[in-house]
Length: 382
Ligand code: GLA
Image (cartoon, protein in one colour):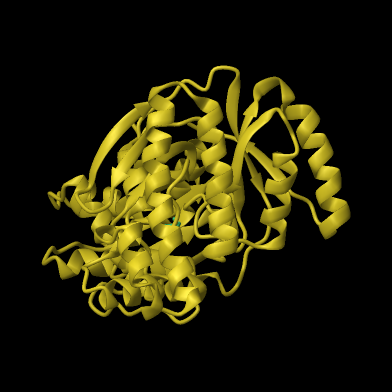
């Protein structure tokens, strides 16, 4: 964990409020495979990473709550008795959203002060939002002794995003950020919420994230639109979700749907299968097969589900040309953010040199590289 981040957050809190806070770390996440499947009650394969958000929180006798986003030097105050989504409130809605959802559960909290800071690059598709939500709900649960289980907390985080931020997200990000474990990826069944832990030995290979540094303004509405398409298809098939639809069934009823809706649903069903195949590949130590699945996933996300963009496609195509990279794909909601690459460790510097130049030349902007470790989920910092 980033000690400097912890110290920085703690020091800023003490300076501003002259109190000793409790400190919580909530990580971001990667996802090996299984994209846009969570809200279809399908399968995902995420892991928490060693980058995330540190929240410092304490009770206050003042007559309002104050929240400070240290990294962007922004702050606001609010009253607990009249919470509403804030128009264009960006990060503030994650905070008030969590508080409001706690209240909806019939729990009472008192005024508090919050300072948070993070080392997850914004808009990179590494779920800084889930990390923020989880850090706040976890800290308030601790501070006011609310007695929520971790499972209850992730649903509070998710609801905050649905009702206050307006993104109808699945449960993957909040789950991974809460339940992650060291060196472990979690194959999660989003219907039963049961996860199978996979300890991964990447041997001579490692995970490299490449940030396209594109953040798409319309990503949130496009995300909700995809969800609507999936719900429309499952409704037409009289199923609760796409989880209960087989590929054979979809093919048989193909004429019921527009080509667009059919392709979107097909992608989801195929991606669910890839998650299972990836689990077997990991169990069999077959990293090459795992890599091929990543490339296939990208193809589906780009051509069928249409949530990629030129920059992400470029990064994956370049990876595909390199024999030292077993697999790559866009990761997260899409329209920007990172690609995840399974790359030979000793090939990293050569590849990153080459790709930085090619990316700059093609798009007239820089891409960034991150290496992450699979790490522990949300916890109190002693
Ligand atoms: C975002 C959402 C998740 C998930 C991914 C796509 O990260 O928050 O719930 O749907 O996109 O897999």
